Length: 94
Image 1 (cartoon, one colour):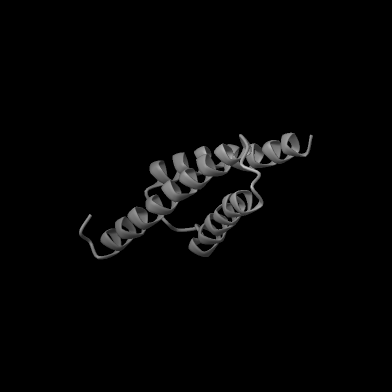
Image 2 (spheres, one colour; image 1 turned 60 degrees about the vertical axis):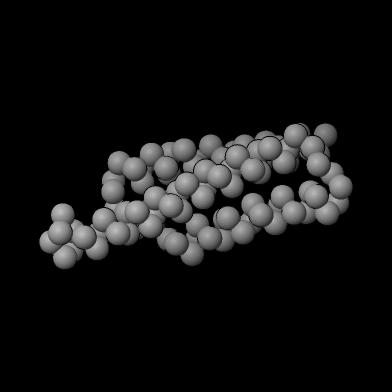
């Protein structure tokens, strides 16, 4: 039963990332985004995955951790792309 609630928690967190990715793609700016927050979320998902392996409780929930990790990682890549676009706009290259 605890795995169901854990899965629901991770799925609930994961629902927000496609929206964030879409906004990052559409806005083409890193303004208003927190790089530190993105890194902390990535670290959190890594810790969750590692804890599952260390405890030997590798269940279907790990899949959701991994999916969320890759969505946040995608958002991180978009942050750096958008940061570069911001710099190009400021220097007049765009």
